[in-house]
Amino acid sequence: MNEFILALFQEHGKLKPSSLFHLLKGKRTTSILSFGFFHDLLHLNGMLPKYEQEAFWHMIDTLIAEGSLVARDEEVLITPSGIKAIQKLPTEFLKKVDYFTLGRRSEKMWRLVQFTVQVASNLGKTNHYLPLETSPEYTEKIRHLVRQHPDQLADRIFQELTVIFESMPAKAADYLAQTFTGHQVIGHAAYQLTPDNFREFPWSQLYHDSHTQYFFRLLQQHPDFLLYQLTAPYYLENENQSMHKTRELFLAGYSKEQIMKQRHLKAGTINDHLIEWALRDPRFPFSAFISSAALEKLVTIDGDYRNWDYREILAAYQIPFEEVRLYQIMRKREETHA
Image 1 (cartoon, one colour):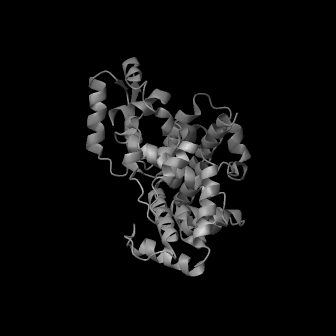
Image 2 (cartoon, rainbow, N blue to C red):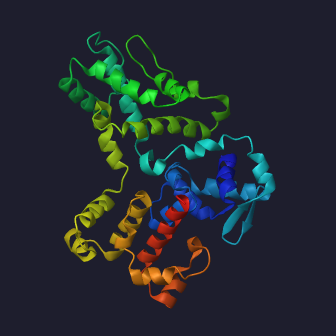
Image 3 (spheres, helix red, strand yellow):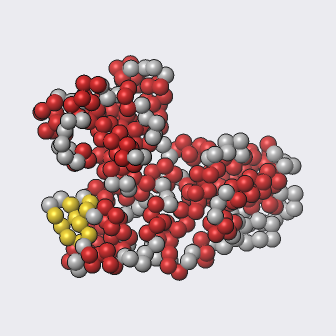
C-alpha cells in the first residue's frame, strides 16, 4: 500500500493528504471531486471504500519518516528516494481504471455477466450444476432473460462476447475468458490469473478491475446487446441520480429557480449538481452557466487557477462560487485537450 500511495504522488509531485484519503475512500463532495479532477485522480474516486483513516495517516507518517515523502504546509511532496522506490511498479494500470464512472457497481456487473455465461452454456444441456449466484438480485434477472430468449440465448451471448473480446487486446480478453464457468468448464479465480508483479493489494485489484471496466466501456457502445440491457441499470446506479434529474431539467429548458421550486432543493444543492455535471461531461455547456461579466473578470486573475482562494475572488469581484468553479473546470478541460 505504501508504494501505491507513493505512485499517486509521483506524477503530481505534491498532494494534500486529507483530500487524497477522502477521494480514495469515495467521498463525493464537490471539493473532493474537484481535487481529483484538477490532479487527474478523479478516476480513483471510491477505489478503496473500506480504507481506514488511521491506517492512511500512519502510512503517510511512515513514508515521511523514511524520507520518501516530505511535508510542506498542508501538502506532502514526494522525494527523489520516494521516486526511486517505485520505479519498477506497474503504474500504468493506475490510468486504466475509472471508479468514478464504474467503480461502485463494476464487480456486481461482472458477476452478472459470469452468471449469464454459466446459465447460457448449460441451457438445454443440464440443470444439474452448482450456480455461481443464488441471490435474487442475479437469479431473477437471468430467469427473465431465459424466458425471453429460451432458444437463442447461448448463441446471442457467444456472439456478443466475441464482438467485445475481439475489440480488446488478446491478453485482456484471455484473462476475462478464463474466469468463465460453463458446461463442463470450471473458471479460474482472479488470483490464479494475476501476474506475480500484481499479487499485492491494491495492485491485484487494479489489474482485475482494469480488465472488467474496459469490458464494460466497450459493452456500453452496443446498447442492442443483451448483456448491455442486462447490466444497464448498474451503469445508471454509478451516477448521482439527483444530479442526473437536475441535468435533465436544465437541458429541458428549466431555469435554476424553476428547478429549485419543482425539486424542493436549495441553491447550494443545485450548484453542486452543476459542478458534478461539469466534472462528468466533457460536453458541459459552460457558456450557459458562466456569465460574460464573470468571464471577463476571471480571465484577468493571475496565478494557478487550481489554487485560487475563493474568498479573495469574492471580495474583489463578487463572482458566485459556482461560476468560479465552473470556470476552473473549463480551464482544466481546455488544457487537457490542447
